[in-house]
Every structure is written in structure tokens, then in C-alpha cells.
Image (cartoon, rainbow, N blue to C red; front, top):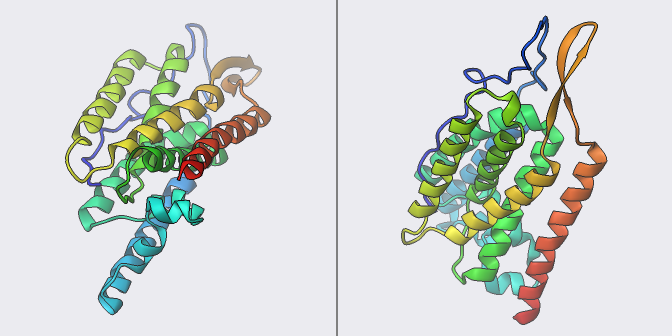
Length: 257
């Protein structure tokens, strides 16, 4: 599944702005580095180096053989194959495109989602993409693009739900939707698992719509800050609910054989 690079949602050029009025301080949700994004990139690169090492030493890609989405093996009980494809890639070009997209989207989105919620978004999107691929196509597949399409969906939801606080939210939203549409169209090319992309998009949308951050402006004696309306409990419940829905779909597919 080779993919083209994605455009950047640049929060530095388009920061949220509070309503008109005297403002002394405007706090961003977090200024910490996007540790989860960096971790995912690092582990994907390490996994790919492991793939290259086994190919060089044994003549076979042992990691892909053990972790790619292969329908008969999932039906036979190797359920981890609905998760592990997120860390595996088929070529240098494949991982380069996907890691570039993950860096561009993940670095910005994680700052608004926070580390834990972003990790849930990424894993749920990747899982959902592999489940839909498992249900809809018999072809083996691998790649982190299932999760990355979930990030695209989450970015679109974030822009829409926080549109009153983001400059040029409409144009940014249209740009995000266009990027998703173009890449889904490119995904119709032979050899690309577009069902996985669509599943990741759906999984990311389901989680982001109900658990993504919705910010309000709150003023106090220090100035103006952003306050997230959605609690950690809600995020946890939505994460469990969305995961169970896709797990049930996978179970149905396994039961059907």
C-alpha cells in the first residue's frame, strides 16, 4: 500500500483565536512535544529495519509473515494480525510516505488531543481499518495508513467542532476533506488496500466525533485560556465502545469463516 504525502495543518499559521475583547493571555492546550507521534514513528522504523534484517539474513520477511493481515490466519486464531500491520511496511517508499504523513498530521493533532487520547485515536483507527479490510477483501495487507486515515478524519472533526475558535476553519476543513478524497481515489490503484483506508477513516471519525476535544474560552484573573469540555471518563467510554463495535464485526467475520 504505497501512498502519497499529505498536506500540513499548520497550527502556527492558523492558531485559535478567542472572541473579541481584551485579552492578555491565550493558552494553547499543550506545548509538550508530540511524544506519541515520535514513538510511533520510531517503532515503525525499528520494525522496518527488522524486516530488512530478516530479509537479508533469511531471505524472507519474517516480521511481515508473523504480523501482516492475512485473513485465513486471523480466522485460525491469530487475532493480533488485526493490530500488528500498523507497524509493518512493504518498501522504503511505503514507510517514507506513511511516516511523513504521520509526522505532519500527528505532530499537530497530538498537541490538541493530548498524548493519551491521541494514542487511543491512533490505535483504534488502525484496528478499525484492519477489521474492515479483513471483512471486505481477502488480500493480505500491511501499513500504518489505516491509522493515518483515522488522523485525517479526526482533524476534520476537530476543525468542524471547534470552528468558532480557529481562523480559516472552513478552508482548512475543505482542504482536509480534499486530501482524504484524493487519497481514497488514489487508493483505488492496484495493490492498495483501500478498504483499510476507509475503515481507518470510519474508526477515526467515530472516536473523534464523540471523544475529540471541544474547546471553550474561559476567562480568569490571569487572562483567557482554553478549557476542554470532554472528560477523561467520556473518552474512555467512547474508546471502549468503538473498539467493541469493530471487535464484534471482526468476530462476525470469523464466525462466518
